[in-house]
Length: 612
Image (tube, rainbow, N blue to C red; front, side, top):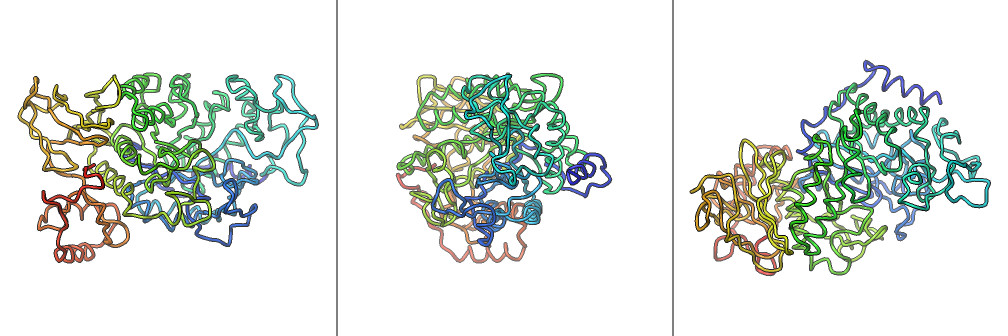
């Protein structure tokens, strides 16, 4: 109890006591986040595998050994992918859980993940690379340590059950949270359509915090402000927000945001999870939609995730994207272009279907193209870039390293920087980083198909440029003979950034001077701009200039095109902070290699003969 009170005084009561923390990102739309289930990513310290629970590497629901040191060991890989930040599952000490969502001690790090210093070191390493750290937190439930003296525990309200610890020697920590009065006593949720049960009932038997209590609210604020301070994290992803009342979030979010601002993080990012597809409900948590108090900065955009799956995997009409975007009116204006977008996560089957992943690689590449060129803060779930195809939990939580819980595409070690999906993601991330319009620009819809799969076209436009993205979700070539609009005047030459030899003139063979007529191959994309750079080019990976050949669509680095080389070198200076001597050495060696091209002078098309 004393420890908790001291934390409150240190974090909230005295800004002078705060140590200097990393400043917040200038704009969260600039970020591309890589989401990791820590226990399943990389085992950097096998000595801690049995420090809290039973090590069961062949059990999908057991502890596998991934830890914070493992993530630190793979930061080169994550940065080479093009991610600008890492979101990790909860780090608090759990009880009989590998995943982090069953807290026992709110003020201790789970020893199987490492130490508090390991977390600080991970944060410092990320910040040294100009990357961000997002911690996953849970503010409404804890581990299942409490039961009842009754024989049953079905939901009842307002009646309560008498609570007791399963084991009086194994209670919640710190001591404040050991108080049984901190927890709801109404039984487990039976009806997930009943909002009262969602708030007052236990989810999957997990002890449910009484978030309507001012004492509980303050205690939760204290511990999470402490984690923000100690870890120097840049934001929190907040789990299961629909299982606490709005009043709690109207207290918690502003108070935590103020604590972060006092600590020097004026744009600390708070985004929540409400796993459903109801825009009205999800939007109600953003900004001031539900009252005068500003609540979440953003939410995970589950409706768009579902739409992306339907359109890019299941061949639904591309106009479904339009319909989802129309519902943005249900969100606070400040969050509409900052919603956290994603393709899949640890709570659902992966985008690629189990047992048939390779057949859907082109679909996934198209979905990744949309993810990284459309509005929002994009998140990629670990292993997506390696073609993981796990089904529902726990099969979607594969070992990234050569562990014992892997199958199909996830079998073996999976930090392959030459994998076609890694390379495609890297290329799009590099393009996104170099064109501000892809991050912060307005998004203007240009073409949809309402009858089924086909063209979805949109522009991203800011004061510097307009990029026209044209996606074809159909299994056959599609043409825009009737014209796809742009903001460019007639007679403007537009370059396809995937292949700058592919050009088109606005106003040519179309009714309007600002339109273009193009053809797009099946399950592929084109991105047009009025200049040919920056274009799709591989960024040199963090491992010193061991450049995967598969990562280059146009091998300008291996020709005398010095200007193109300097662009790529400059980009690598910014992303990886490489030294001038190393870049010059790479250029000298690159001139001694003969480029491998097809008869048109381009990098050979991938299997199937089609350029993506």
